[in-house]
Image (cartoon, rainbow, N blue to C red; front, side):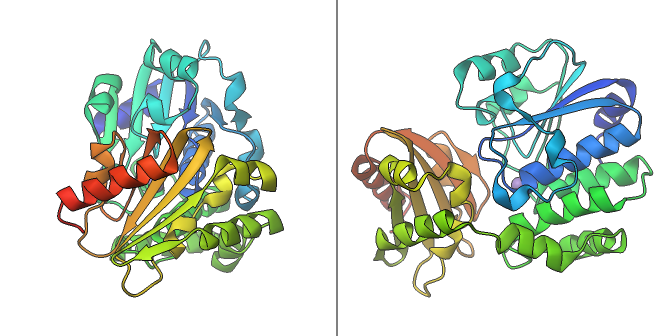
Length: 327
Ligand SMILES: [Mn+2]
């Protein structure tokens, strides 16, 4: 896989880079952001990365993570180049309208590196984009950028790339687990990434409150094959003192039942504002449903945001699934 020349030139020719990613960043978001930051720094560039705070417990081990600043304090003044990784449009960077608007108005070069399906907003926004929905993780794309720049992976970059890969492939279990993914992971291990350490940090590092949130999700679970639906209310988030990032991977557990082909987790991030994560098995393309609601994603993993109550949002989803003959 070959990064576009325009992208490589933009990385070579500019000096001051700002790297951002999506809300509630996961292992691929942080992994891509940090691997690219470390790479550009090795090339002598000035680079800053911002994300939503707090940094989730499961990603505090990532090399370079302490250099990520709180998105609240973002100022765009001193950068030539804005790069979105694992994120295809400004709206995905923040729930804060003023931040999204300032990104849209950024005067420098705007780069998008992502593996979510692109949309019109991506095309309007990006000066340079590299969108590859066929790759398992954005970290894979960062790996190819390292190769193209003839940069030999070091342990820090390899650890970030490896983390992105295992988080987005469910530790080499999802449908996107390809030969390519194993081969890049193998390169990362050669360069010093430690698979068992990274697995434990990323996947077996839940706090008690996160586990209590998980139990709460299970108690809300409604299974009507082929669909499983669960809901976490804003009250539960407040009561347990947890954040959206604490729900990472939860929806994947909802697929565990044999007869469930589509899983949906509804999270009330704020009162009356719900984030919906969808997962599917096999050939069921759930990204079409998410796109209908203004979201997006991949064939088997997608999501969207919707206003209203859980019951309303659930009914709308069920109706849409029926329209697509998935129910
Ligand atoms: Mn990703």
